[in-house]
Image (spheres, rainbow, N blue to C red):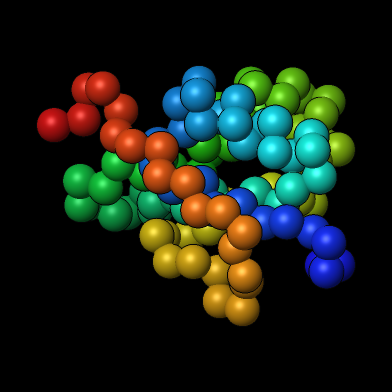
Length: 100
């Protein structure tokens, strides 16, 4: 990763808003990290499964663009920040409206 590369951490469920935000960041040269939960996780975490998060971002970017930006988009396992990464911004995107 070059010194001029900026990295964003987008926490929360991947909604239309957060997916569009991630797509915009990717199109502007950012690296985007999105935490996801495991299918085996039984907690009430508001994070999406990786497949759901990926589908949301792909919908916002478009399937062809998803291929272009794939190396800049990282889905992290769990809520931990990626070790050794300096984040330029951390965004908390809240909870989905139906989360109880």
